[in-house]
Image 1 (tube, rainbow, N blue to C red):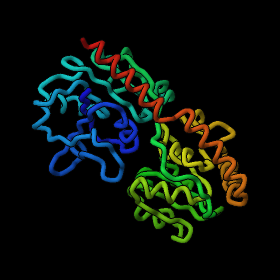
Image 2: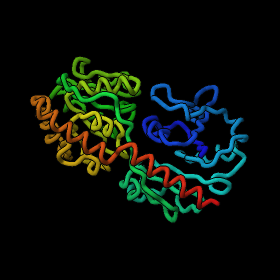
Image 3: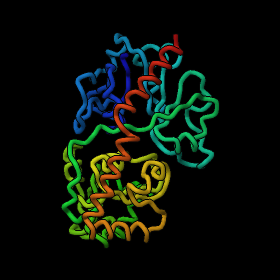
Length: 323
């Protein structure tokens, strides 16, 4: 199939484009949010093609993957065809609902022209999509090329824009763990984080790295922290588990299903999580054993082959239903 989709979430798209299809990704001269083009910090196959919006009308697009409401209007304008009526469309919902939870109305609610695909069962439960057809396709992870080393007695976090998002990403919790061991925060928009949080740079390091180098650096840290209060399910958490890192996780949203008890420590009690981080820092042998169980759990549930097969089935269903 020829699939039109926008580059919105780099890690999810990296897994999605591992399928057998041809993927058309809009690119504009300014590489703005609706024309970002191919990823520059992720490894995408040659089946992903950048395409200027004015060329799309001449392309034999078979299906549209939308991830933001305005993309459906853009697709109609650029293709000269209406997604959901003239060709099948799937709306991928990556995020937990905001606002009046649990009564938040989804922007695609009560539509009969498309299907909403949630990335977690938690999202499917909490979003109100009305009569719109829905499904869940859980995440899949492209296996990182590195394995756990854990030689640095430091803790790691991966999150984007922790200063702006603050309580959502659990940024206010970082000092509790930096008191246990030095904390390294990886992601976009991390500049100024030590000053914003009031920690010296020898206790809080910040890095913005391409995915391959990020994985290399994560693998050297003793344990991974997932402190998001309200997020769908951090792909970086699943990647850390797949590397073989032991994880210390705030027990919220889908994380409670993604991390079985033997693979990490989950709690909503901050003292429990801090004690777990201190234990893993002090006991490298226990950290390695827990990390191996985390790797097994993540590869079993979030394997790439299962993810691609699930998406192939859904794409075929939607294409057949539109005929």
